Amino acid sequence: MPLLKTEQLCVRFGGLAALSEVNFQIARDEVRAVIGPNGAGKSTFFNCLTGVLRPSSGRIILNGEDITGLRSNLISQKGIARSYQITNILPNATALENVRIAAQSRRHAWNMISHHGSFADINAKAEAALASVGLLGKAYDLAANLSHGEQRNLEIGIALATEPKLLCLDEPTAGMSAAETGETKELIHRIGRDLAILIVEHDMEVVMELCHRITVLHYGRILAEGTPKEIQENPRVQEVYLKT
Ligand SMILES: Nc1ncnc2c1ncn2[C@@H]1O[C@H](COP(=O)(O)OP(=O)(O)O)[C@@H](O)[C@H]1O
Ligand SMILES: [Mg+2]
Image 1 (cartoon, rainbow, N blue to C red):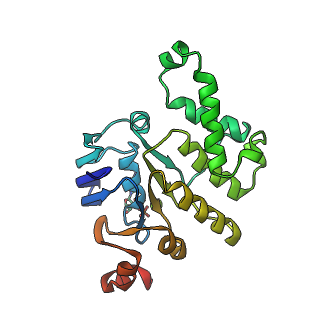
Image 2 (image 1 turned 45 degrees about the vertical axis):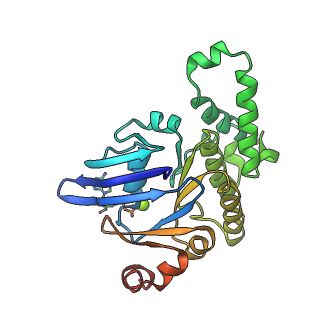
């Protein structure tokens, strides 16, 4: 059984079909890229999966459970996390506090009151999430004082702290230097061993190196799907995307 699948997913904005009949599947140990020209529907797809947007029709199934139309906080509790293109960080909180807030959001309020160990537990989880994005050494730095690349990685840490089964990353290397891009690539590769990752990325080198498979969106439809090699060699993909 795939970790996540969509069936005939459609999103319409007035007369515009932003997504049409998207049938998508991702396995639980997969790193998948979604690529496509501007306006292809990539962010709309992420918005549906994370409950930011309700699809016009079709279904989203996580672990066999229909999660279509659930609110984003519920979807987060069920195991889909996202880091935003636009930063999601509290600048005047420390790196650790930023991650701890996310770790807490995973819990029900009654759970925190009734279990004495919970606070220590949340701290441990927050530290683990920071460690996995290489920021444990900066736990007590204000987020505002981190470099751009470190802030982007902190966003990934925030998403990881919710203990997702599927992590959606929208352009994680945007605005990064070559060195930072290399580090983030390694980071994604490392965390991808333990969960499924869905990544929107324009840097084709990053996509080709990191991802097992690629899904190409074009005008809201899946144009092609395959390994990086298959996608690179696909003439239709070259026509609409790689050559532009
Ligand atoms: N909230 C919205 N209202 C109306 N149209 C939208 C909205 N969000 C996206 N769109 C349109 O849907 C299409 C897909 O957009 P988007 O998912 O952002 O593409 P991508 O992320 O691939 O660049 C575009 O034509 C865009 O203008
Ligand atoms: Mg987008």
